[in-house]
Image (cartoon, rainbow, N blue to C red; front, side, top):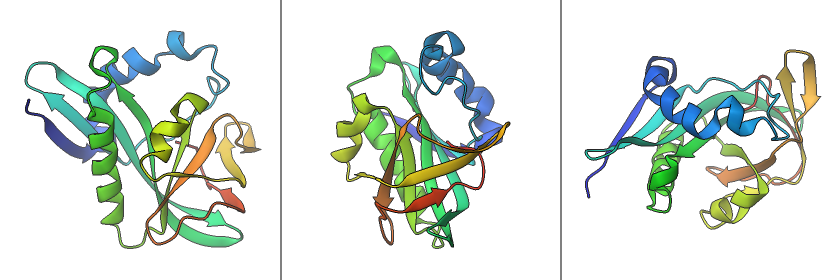
Length: 175
């Protein structure tokens, strides 16, 4: 099996990623989710995994942001919009894409930790890949203003540190 891993500009690569994203996270599929009403940030970069047989099979968005953690500005990386074609799950594509995303985040020397948000059914997936639950509070921006983000659970990844307590203000939209 051969795969191709591309890391591309987020906005420029959206037309490539959008059909997969809509197939996995389209409005009709997420309407009953507690986060269906959330406005999400656009990825700065995208990890795209393609196979010669199947085309695009997996996507991970990469985000860079200066946030406020416990009153201090901190530059972090994030991953979001993780999706794999339903008929290609369980083959390790998401793990490869997340590893590529973390490698890319690490290459930005200003980044102190990485952050993602996930649903309970994905907790063990991320925990077995060294992501730690963040037990503090997370705030973000939405069209109606600043809110406490409780719709999905935050997880952190150690780049220079992995804070698991305190308050994080995303200073923008969540991912």
